[in-house]
Image (cartoon, rainbow, N blue to C red; front, top):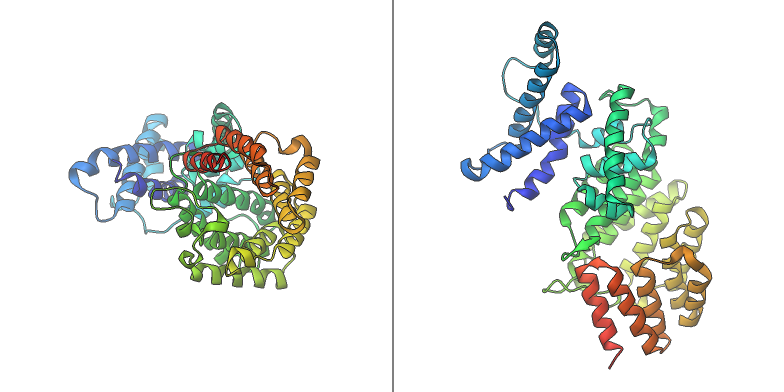
Length: 402
């Protein structure tokens, strides 16, 4: 089953989209897909993976959906509807990927609250578990489960159909879509818990969906910015861990291992977006990533330019992580003392996250306060749920003790 899990996880949203497009009813469609996935997990290890695994899952899920329809509908109406909806043969329809349509039309339906849009999309399209979504959103697991349940009920009550929205509705849905894809990518690039730093299946899926969105909306600067940000960030992944899985910070990475093709594509995307469209937060984040990626060595990083970009980002899209990253840039430009002052000035808005303690530790170490740095590294190590991050922080604490 372990070998099948990545395949089933990749296919699940595609199958769900196909079933919902064909039959409607998101909630019942998800139940049918779960039955198909369970059947695959049971049968494929014995019988082998079929030549067309997606088609197999669509067929089994469709049969499960029809069976549920038969249980819940009067016989005459049932037979008439099934006859209209089901082709004469049992073969599935053409292999088209409706995952992005599912994302835009149902998971980000305007009847849903933004919080519900995010939770439902992470579940249905990103394939995250309820616990993973809770960690990504920093809310209790029970809250996420309630949001997903209410979202399904709302979609059903709103009579949402699997058809393209009118053009005037698209901008209102895009913000939630981009935020969701960003969350999926971040959970894959730095897993919020566990012993793996990366979950490549999530970063790959986020990039794939964002690329599809960019193909549909090539003139949208923020879609291009998000895709550029993902490519420029993911390009560093080969150098981000050692052979034993240990984390390697950006300043210590072997830049010859970075994916230069991805960097070139990302730079081209963000450069074009910044010069032809209104500037948005994802474009600015991508520009910051590009400055890091284009530096031949860590010592060559243009920190004044990065600080200027963070200043702009703080004006148009302020937030705790923007504030924290700007603190680092302040320290790199004006010295660790200035960075510590900026961190203190941020106040309680930044407290409680392990990265705040990690940044404080780094700045104290830069300032020569080894005892203070050690205590802050140890605090950060206690707060993180990520095994690789904990090991790195504990190692930094040990180094400041010698």
